[in-house]
Image (cartoon, rainbow, N blue to C red; front, top):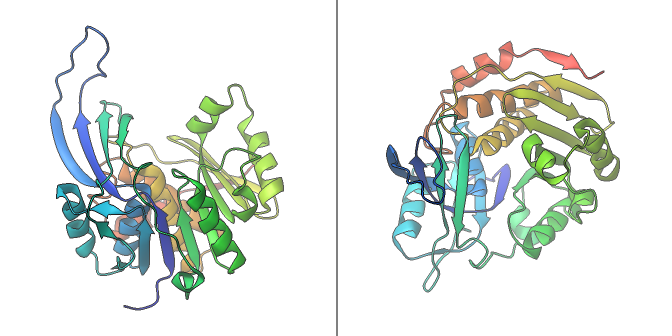
Length: 304
């Protein structure tokens, strides 16, 4: 296989998506309207999106098992010729991680997560990064995430890391691009001014800091601390699972193809916005022309 432009490291597993009119609570039963299975995990979702956009990707992270979900995972990955899955390891005695996501009519989801912390993790070496331009990394793991970010950063590979919201997080100095969730920031830092918070992160990372916020304004700081905003389009959300992974994929696609940062973020916003219209994190990828047309239609405003 040709040299991969992006290495996606992190979660690899299966999503069980359950659509329901409401969430269950004590003494309140809920009757789901659908129950389906999809490829899942932030690293795997990002890899599938990038591969569908024509980007050569290498995928690794947690080990998966020789079980039903493991076989489903590998079968799904083999459908994408742009994904190099030679570092995805199936191992006897390992249970493939999975997530049960209850999705309500507003597209929001509540997660029950099984097996990711317990699954063994692949340790990368410098040779695994040969030819790679970007590391796409999720932080939903242990010390191997920091080791991977440091290895990539010190090897001259740009790092795109999700939800680096803590100013004292040891990975922040190794973060070239932080893609953070506004709702996660508000939950973790009640009452915080998100723009000031982003500027604090940027002063430490010296990189790009992007704060997405669902249908609300996306705020961006470039590596020099200059800010701008992009308003996502109005869409009817069916399932927000994997929207951040789609965003990161569109962003990296743009940067890899030589677009400037504002246009690349427009690609990220377009991919994330179109993703929420479909069930599953990366089951239905919109057509290239649809993403491109939406990205080109989005206005970019300076952040005052």
